[in-house]
Amino acid sequence: MLLFLEQVLSMMANSTPVATIFVDFKTAFDQLWFEGCIGKLKRMGIPTPFLKWINNWLLNRRAYVEIQGRKSRWFHIHRGGPQGSILTPTVFITYHSDMTNYINMASSYMFADDLAAVVSGRIGEKYSLQYLDLEHRLKSLLDALEFYAILSIQPINYEKTVGLWSACAIGGPKFCLHMGDTDIRWAQEFKCLGY
Image (cartoon, rainbow, N blue to C red):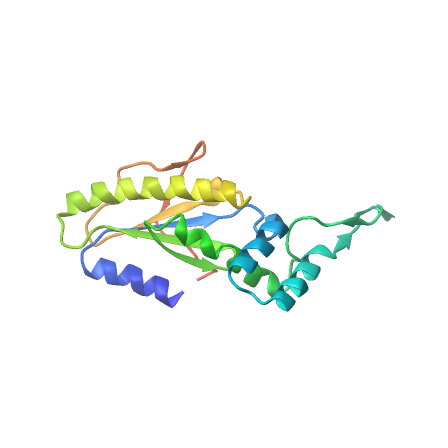
């Protein structure tokens, strides 16, 4: 969180406009794809004993549904990490550690299942040129995020995804951003992790 704040404040101190896109992943932990997760962990060089343990932790779970005192049959869970587990956010962040390869036009910060992607203007250019460049790079970022969401089977909640404009100059962005069929809302303020 401190690195994120320091980057935004540093860019603003250089009179550079900064846009942060706060991405909400739809039912994030519930969408964790087991096979993809294990494959990524293996490519990262996680030792085999740990991979086996994580694989068993993910795969050997089952549940039932109870409605008005009546229980369904037990069924196996094929997707998602256990809610409330201390390991689920760690596995989720590790699973998405390759996201930076897809959104390299931004600095990205993951906080559990929340993503803050920061794009800033180019230092030393006129504000109007920074503004135009920033608009172009933000649109590229959103396209790349949508592509990544499809590849990782991790849908984005477009309605809860917002942009935050930070600049020393007066006024906010005059351009619109879209993801899917949704306009990204520009917020005046945003609470990340409740802060």
